[in-house]
Length: 312
Image (cartoon, rainbow, N blue to C red; front, side, top):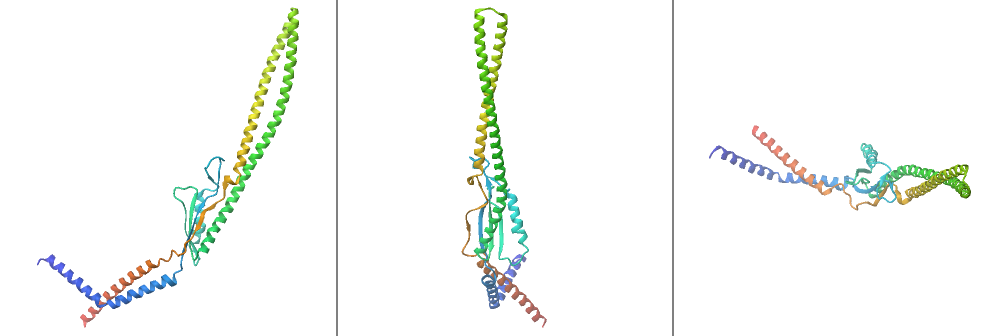
């Protein structure tokens, strides 16, 4: 038998002796393990406070910049809002003991820039629901301020557009009056041209020809002025139409369908059974610790006992 085989044989003997030792203390091992399980059960079923999970999905307050668009723009940057909520409801409450609630997480929903999830552990569902509603109320109050500013800016733009329309309408009246005067001047000039043509047809007169040329030049300038006035009137009308369309779009922006304060999507999620403590896991860990402690204890005790007997 070589050296390696002897070592294997010794290991087998040691394992047999180990199992014999443990078997000799089986009652103690069982009792200690059972004691730890009892302690774990007492903690899980009596001492540990049940924790219910309450959660909700929030949609950040928004407005639609273009009435016909589905693109939503947030009143408040959602990342900044989540950071603020984490500071207020998680970090600032970490060191406060004996709270009947604890925020589990406040985080942005993956691949969604407008929604975030809030999860709470509380002694009961009612406490968790009240905290979710408290957050919603606070966020709505913040949105209400931003929404008020947003609406005021839109209303100011509408007022400015209305004032500009009134100015343009007054300008149009002035242009129309100028056009009437030009029309009359054109009619009078045309009548004079006709009269001068009649005179020239009956007699040759250099002065009449010069006067007729002046009248024709005047008529050309009058027609150019008429064209300019008509163009100005058309441009003025276009500006009024554009402003009226702008006012219509601005008014749509402040309709309830074009904006929303922060809200909870669907319902607040609650569970009938607590998620903590995990009783089965606690019992399993208690059993494992009890078994480990009992085995370690009896082995130490057996070594001490052998050493004592050897000395005697």
